[in-house]
Length: 456
Image (cartoon, rainbow, N blue to C red; front, side):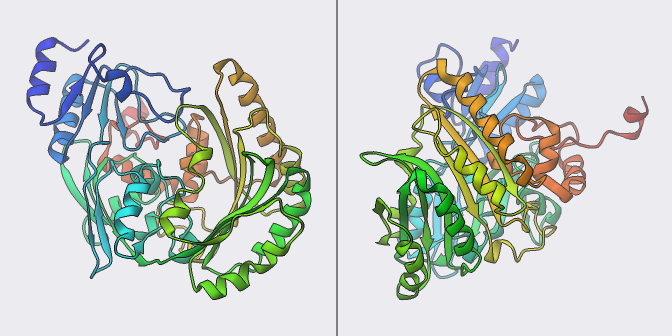
């Protein structure tokens, strides 16, 4: 219980709006992308800047409150929302400033990638930043950050130049290659374990019109399409990002598609994609030259907020015959809104040493994921069980690596798998900057126990 006097004093210390149960706007503020998440924070603080964030951290420490941090609210596991604690809501922090001369951008954590892309593309610039406009840039970057430009320019975290971070002791630190480099290393793939980022600085790249979209085949052709995909991706240039995906297309039905982006010379892109577009007898070819922002919004209608969602994912050792057959067996799902995906990682992603950033999964060429979504909560058990069965069927082709941004609420063993060989180094960073595990509403890295406590 928090006293009324403490809450009143806290509210007076902030420039931002605070919401408690029963206040107008409270229920909307606690709603996130996944409709299966239904939690009730004691207080929601809708921060406007770093000062508000620092005040929130101090208050939560004084009151011994559980803290969650919301950026875009897109976490499938609902890490943005806590029960009975303080939700630090950054969604109003949407400042962004592009420096077109240096080709950099300073962006606040409440931005979604569609907003980010719109501003950077006004200058013909972009950086790797997911594939769905409603995804928050903060969680995406801190977990690694896949996207259409990754094989040419690296992950979102590879393009991070610096970050301003409120740590567990309510200090505001700058993390970069020169300042607090251990913290900077941990932020690039370690999730929200070390603090609350209030500002990100990214490297940008020249990105004009791209050749993007997808080619879709009847789902019954999944085996043939995936075999072709394996062969085609073995020779992909850095400029090409391509993934195989099963989904339901309005007026067409259930399909398997090969979709993505070529971000180099459009003439060369046409040549590179010609075999993909000529393969088989597709029911639709939606590849074309388009603005990058248009491409980034292309798959948004397939993943709207407000549906129940469950995800399973893992890196594959390779796209084996077994993986292809198992994926094809589960190409049709209980819900028409469910998608299965096999993403291809190569190029710039694979040329970074696994220990150079906290994101360790540089050697795996394929990332498999299941995105189960449905409308009726009565269908939850059916859809979740189908997802688990699909995942189990793919298991023999998997590595031990997990992408942290695709993790459900699955506990410490999976956290270790998400951070791979970098886990012990991450524990050291966590122990230095958050020794009491104040930031634990995440895929948690536990700090090392003091020797006395461990002995006791």
